[in-house]
Length: 375
Image (cartoon, rainbow, N blue to C red; front, side, top):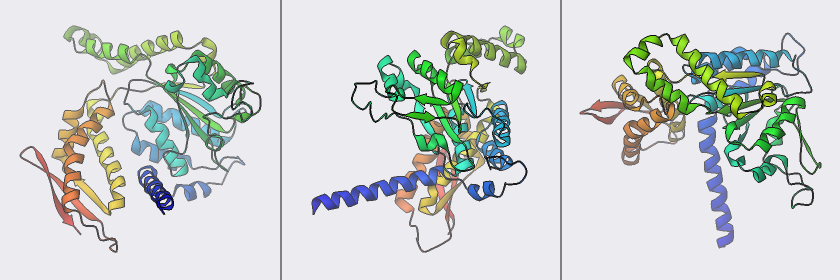
């Protein structure tokens, strides 16, 4: 029967997609048990191991010490359970250039807390750029279709979290949302509640950590970087702390020109991410290779990469303007495409074997070749 066959095929496709996501998002450690075991000390409603979480986050986020410290401080306050119960647990705004890890640090936190990098409520604010799109967040007004149901794009389960664990919310690219959306968020920051426009339903953010990201002042930062290339100006601003202070000043001025003082004043923490430095590029490439091997688990294989290839990817992909995304494009071209071709032609996995097949990537005549190291 064609209808049943289509349903079976669709179910199988969804299963494969879920398995692929689990391989990409899952943690290598048993994070759930590590949190359960951390039940000593304070009689807190939250039970998670800060040291375990931070070790995981630090292994995934490179060159952002200030942001990592801000996350650790936030976790201490939440774990101690001393926050105002009428407000969200914490609200934090991550500012900085594109491709520096603002979203990735939230994914790393979700993975270390829940064992799943997608275990948070993500709202892309660029989809709420028009005034009438605000209903996606606040619900349809009275008299409109769907008003009685009070449905929004908010995932109630993810903002509430689980027993002993806080919920996580990410408001991505905050500056692209309309002023009506910013106004609705004021109430969320102030009392942790969002009542839909019809009044039929109220969403609680009081058990959630709210992260926001913004690319505000990215062009100004790029202009500042270009000035640093000038010999005379570069001598004046060679001091790293002075350059960082200049970037912070630019971003904060831009932020106050974009958001109302009332909005900014309700944010618990504002962190400016660094641009990617040349000294951290190879470490980021190594991290991307680690992520690639996580995806290769489903094929029962892994890839080992020589340092020459890592350096080649780093040198060809390093671009401050585009951050880590430029490195990922370089890695796709130099490593992943040749690896995909090799797997399609040569990979023969034995599903009954517990031994992984290891492919070693080598550089020969400016081309990446692979050899089977071990079966």
